[in-house]
Image (cartoon, rainbow, N blue to C red; front, side, top):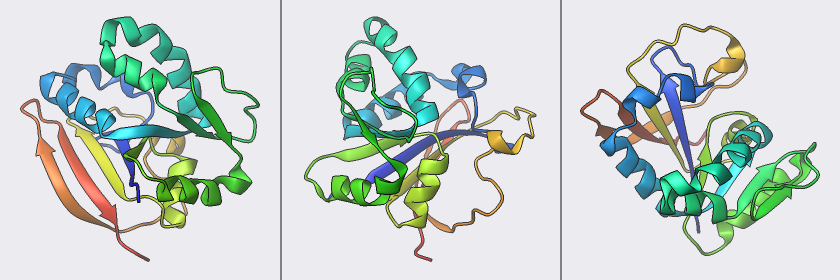
Length: 186
């Protein structure tokens, strides 16, 4: 059975939105190595509509500068949970309707293969958590306070609660800590 691994950048004040604005100073060799290992341990990407929109616009143009990392991002199957997206333009896009998401994602997990990687934490992540489908949460904790407080920009929103066990940590020399958690059964 495959694992679903969520990988999310987070600031010290809980912000996860627009990481391109506050993480780049911390994306050195150690982070690149970890990101590479994580991506190449996966053979599918799972995302919501907002992440898909950003990735599908950015990654096709980045393959030349990122080499085989970009090629892998572009060529893996992309599973998108969305009711509004009719057709995915990015390579290998499969659209999963919200009403079918739990059953379809459970089927994906049952298939043989590598991990299923999810970037960012939003409604799809909460659906995974609510239904026991998320296997690991990797928080890339950045030593920065972003200073925004809009609930839509934070890791969690009102009404979502969960408990986790810490299973691994990676501490980078620039202060980034990647904490890996597994959800505790509720």
